[in-house]
Image 1 (spheres, helix red, strand yellow):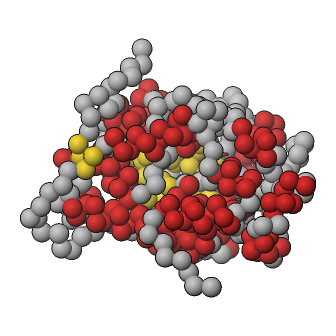
Image 2: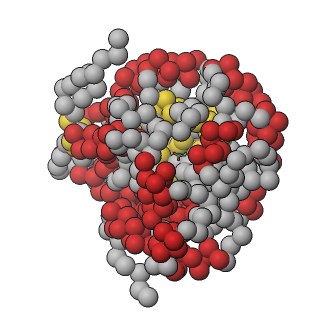
Image 3: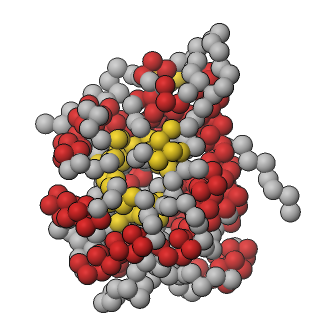
Amino acid sequence: MSRPVITSIDDLKRLYRRRAPRMFYDYCESGAWTEQTFRENTSDFSDIRLRQRVAVDMSDRSLRSTMIGQDVAMPVALAPVGLTGMQRADGEIKAARAAEKFGVPFTLSTMSICSIEDVAEHTSAPFWFQLYTMKDQDYLRRLIERARAANCSALVITLDLQILGQRHKDLKNGLSAPPKLTPKTLADLATRWSWGLEMLGTKRRGFGNIVGHVTDVGDPASLMSWTAEQFDPRLDWSKIAQIKEMWGGKVILKGVLDPEDAKMAAKMGCDAIVVSNHGGRQLDGALSSIRMLDPILQAVGGQTEVYLDSGIRSGQDVLKALAMGADGTMIGRAFVYGLGALGEAGVTAALEVIAKEMDTSMALCGKRDIRDVSRDILMVPEDFSGRWQAP
Ligand code: GLV
């Protein structure tokens, strides 16, 4: 079968939709409750326009940059995404390999299917490990030790998911890893035979970082059960400081959406923060990440690197975030679409699409180096960040 021509992230999304079981497509493609924040994360990007410039030398262009001091082929890291190994067999390994070959960081989620050790064994570049803080302190300590033993180069602590925002479809679909075989899931899986064949060929079908390491969970296959029973709802800044101390390496704090929280994060001396609302999957009604970027940049005043995640579906979106002042970005769904569509080659395709869009758009804005883009390539509505005021 010849490979379809892929020209956009949307092409990958269409293929992914046809190939992945409905339950996992829905898991990826949902926001919390009314999905307002999920929708606005992407639609707010189109409120910002790019400024076309002409008659400038556009030879010798570069997308290269650094993130937390690491060289990157472009400032786009793969975000941590739970259950990635259910979108495609061994999905985390495939995505990590694509990221390594492309030269961008890969972040492994605590709620991954492939374990830290699995990914380390099948890659050579150090990856970042995303940590959810659990009530079980012993387990937490061991998880951090495992990330250290696997040579992970940063700990990404997620701050916006101590309890789970409700995504209606996951409840209706009975989301679980592996999927439970009911008449509804069987009917769906029957039309997803290539997914199923690949899944039969792997042993990795449960939550690899936690099954066998934690006990007392009602249903070990359910993300809802894990979060409700294990995640620590008492997480506060002092606990974050303790974890940072325990880890002793680079720390990225993900899920900051408010200037006050950004100041706290910067004060702790983290290496980067990620302006994120978890892809619109947590607090429905929160403003989009791109709208909150400017006030957060002003609040931290260069004390820490600032990355943006939530809503990026193109190289133009990355360019806009960087021109607004972000030091880097993260993509979640955009790479999952690629993975579900074409496996490792699809993740590579997603990265290539984004790089090409970013490179061409940067040139048409009159710039040759991604590290030189700034506000002067943007046209931003006057009230873009200021229409909503916190008290
Ligand atoms: C977990 O990270 C989720 O958003 O489902």
